[in-house]
Image (tube, rainbow, N blue to C red; front, top):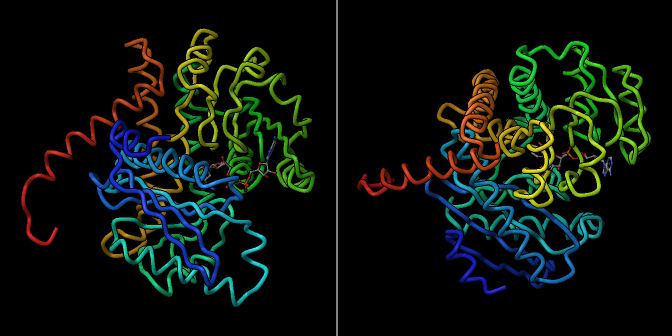
Length: 362
Ligand code: NAD
């Protein structure tokens, strides 16, 4: 990949490579955009095959965060960090683990708040506690906003209500059959909300224990992981991996709505978004549906500190945003994710002009 060409084409600001020989740290931080505010996004630890793969991943993820925060109405830009390595290996030796994360924290601090980090795949709250020993540019710490998953699930639930209103004329999920794929953090809390709302819930997971917990606590019905796509359902809620809407799964889906917490649900957005539309299936753009977590952590940086009540009110607003996007998409014939992208880009462009006004110290 020609990185400068790619960065220029998609408006990236910065890509930084950091290494620390003593701890074995190899990190890449990408700041896609700071037009709306500091670039916030988690740190992912992954056993990437090579640097190129890691760099491509961080570029893609950072840009996704810009769009997510922009559409959620936050004063935040988009960024991300990836670390090349095996999460279990890094955790094995406690002394090395602390040094590793504190070295990373020092590099994050060196970005002077242009980038704010958080937990992501392969990292834990404890890792972020070490990062916080070196920098305040980290969110999602214990005793503050905590685990974002229940808030992500709440946003998905509000999005589902908006989709139901759009399709059935009523927000109620009572009696609707919802298939939740993946009942880890987000999926579990989503099942809880759906159970309270009186939905019939089908669940699948590759970890049997997680399925069992939902069956016992919420009376959900377990479905084989390959059979979930063809199950009789009204709503399909992907809460595991990305790209589950693809050439193989699409013909099997009998639902009216796709709305879940997973990132990048459409394998090829233009192709599979169009295929859903052609089949009359409403698709809730993923980065709006799953914005509850980032909205919640953003409150750690709000004036006056973290405020759960205000955060929940903000997450409730996902309902109206989703309704608006589905309405515009119907009126214009645009795919819902294209409408979402256009609105996010519109906000960034409007704010780019505001930023040209000189205010000393900002
Ligand atoms: P998680 O790892 O806790 O849960 C994912 C679950 O999916 C696990 O239980 C895993 O066993 C299961 N799974 C994996 N492959 C599967 C398959 N083929 N079929 C069925 N189940 C499978 O992760 P999470 O934090 O709940 O996040 C879920 C998704 O939501 C991810 O795509 C993540 O990027 C996205 N997301 C999460 C948050 C958050 O706040 N946690 C915020 C935004 C987006």
